[in-house]
Amino acid sequence: MDPFGKEFLLAFFPLLVAIDAIGTVPILLGILESASPQQRRRAINIALLTAMAVGLAFLFLGHALLRFLDIEVGHFAIAGGIVLLAIALGELVGTGFLRQQPPDVRELAAVVPIGTPLTAGPGTLATLLVLTDQYSYGIVVSAFVVNIVIAWIIFTFGTTIARFLGKGGLRASSKIAALLLAAIAVRLAVTGIKESFAI
Image (cartoon, rainbow, N blue to C red):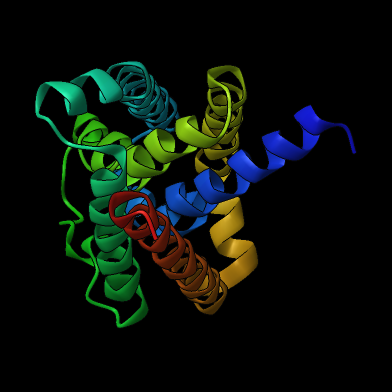
């Protein structure tokens, strides 16, 4: 495999796990339960455009913000790893943020829980920032945009996916994603510790 393809995949998979679009499907369906197909499509488009805007803004301004606050990338990697681990553990034990969202939120409220912080939340933002230290901006942006497109496909066909997987399948896929997210969180934290303390 060529270097670009390898680096793209190495950036793509952590973002795929951090975004966890499959795990968000039940919440999306609950929020948009009473919406018409047209309203659902519009809400999904707005939510993912919001997620992309937040992610790209943080991708390009995140390092400047850290410098302004005198925070090293290693420190952010440790904090990001802890946040990711907390989210993953919350999902694994069934008390995560996903299960705390009210089902009767209006259509455009999907922007807030779905666009951010669920799609472009602390885990995704931390992953984006750490990845830019390892790979070029072009690779990270490409991996992020492809993940947003995948999330759009999953959200658009959420009802079909939910029917195919069933409640048990959705729950299992979410748990597996959470376990992978926990592993990535540990790796981020360890990398941050090594960078911060020159181990």
